[in-house]
Image (tube, rainbow, N blue to C red):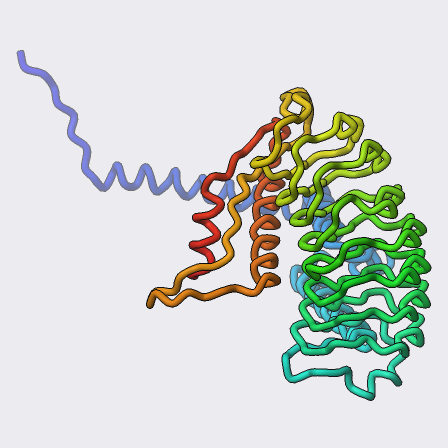
Length: 378
């Protein structure tokens, strides 16, 4: 007796599934209509819209009229577009207002300041660099609103005593000029926060009157001829950054721990043979950079992994000249070499900060010479 085999026509199967599909679509349509009419769904939509507006900083008055929330996407885009336009206009207006108070000058064609500058006593910032200007005129005392004097890489040989009249001065940068002294009147600029006299090569001291600068947090006197840390610097109670690298220091004062706020201390390329234990009293000191060639004694706690201090010892391998590809020797100016060294160290310190490690370490940069030589050929 054989088996019975049931055979269906394909049209019957297709009709069965088409019926089921129609029923499912009809159910979906009813469900969509129900949700569309649902107050709960409307509330949810409004809530999401309000949340989005708040996230983008759009004021409630812009999308809520008489207690009703307009959830139009076009409205949101329009509000956002208007907001961006308004922010752009405000930014341009701020830049325009700022430029009216800023004086900028650069280029070796300038040997003196323009005469018209004397009349612009409303200026708050001077940015003068890479010129052949040698003198800052005494009429600078007229600029009572001055906040920033940025004068790097010029030929300035003298600062007038009248600079002490700038009671609102916050930053003074006279790096890589030809200064041999700093006027004691600068001590009258009681709001000064940043002082950069690096790379002048001939500075040997800072006037004691600078002890009055209690707001200073940054001092850079690198690449000069200081034989010791200036007394006035030790009295700057808020000092956080001190760079006295590339000078003629043979020791550090025993009261260096007076600088209780000091966080970064850069000493490389001096003639230090030891580091005082007083450094361990600087509880906020986070980075200490020295030259390792002359050191014979240092507190072992500086390399203790229990402290957050980053102790960096650079092998001191100065390069005074280099060779071009054609074999002709090229002597660099001392200022150019010092500027290059500072830029290198600045980049290196930034790299340390980016790593963000709190582990104490000592690094001997034996490749420093090779790196400098390479960069000079680039």
